[in-house]
Image (tube, rainbow, N blue to C red; front, side, top):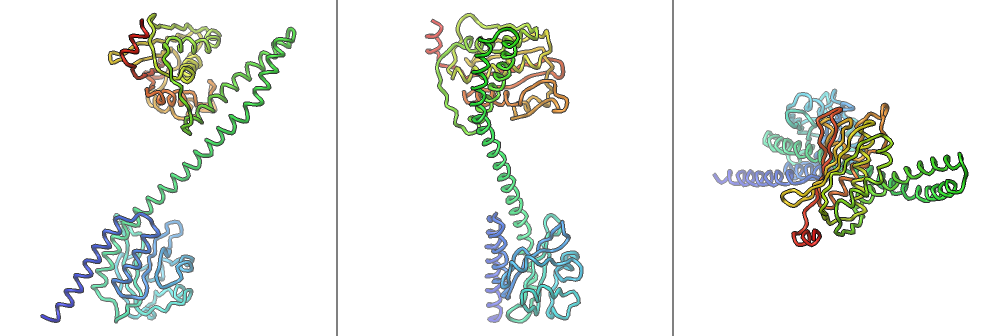
Length: 423
């Protein structure tokens, strides 16, 4: 009876350590820290000279040392272990733990590893690691300090290996997600910097071109004046693109300053229409502004909100064939929110595209067969500016050639302010 007490105490201590290991493995997502914890803890529990983790490399179809105690881990990482003619490979392929009391006499002892790091292996315990019934590697313990490895050691290392396999899998997923996020962040940073640099560098030469073209148009006779007008129109289009890139960049960097004042929505919508009026007339569009006579006030940054509706009206004009109809209307919802609707009889939008069109640089038309211009940033800018006002924007369409409707909902203002504006 007295002899069993130390054994029971030892078993209780090991069980406590395994519980501790389980908690730590389930709470550690840093892969390097996790690997070091596994090998050091297994070495302590099994009282051996070294513990190694070998993970399967699918590309090379070999086992690779991921971590090891008591050896040159960097040198080990350079030594791939083949699945054939190696003890670790045998355990990996057959999914069966192995205890060897005399490693040197085993036919599959892979001596290259021992000689490369000058570590003499006498006895060994190797157990497989699996995740969701898929082999992922092996966990091996080398040189038991007192005697040889036992079946009890095998049970303990197998428990650690099964928990470690899941923890390593999760840590790898987290690491992959972080790397993907960093790549996306770097790409977004490059795009943002490019937009800022391009818009800044283009402003000066465009200003010079617009200045000289305006001068030539006013001072030159006949055909030369017409040429100057074409240059001026092209430069103005380019400046509009530069302004759009600037707005997009400011929205991304959250540097846009909002200067809100109370203005009637009718004033903003008529101003926006005046900017696209010539293009609409050139295409023979019938444009209707269905706006109430009584002012509908909105608290906004007039310049920013003007940009929104210029983009939406320009979009309606460009994507509506010649002789089409465009209707702009505004009203107050029963709850007091402002609803602005821009409806056209244009080419329409497939239901699957209705949300995608607000993504940056998204084009409904393939670039090889595009009939309509634009960078695909007008709608994202409109969405960003409306959301900056606390509003919402969305598109509705029944499909190809069935027209489109863009709706903008702006938050209500207080009743006292509304009554003052109406009086």
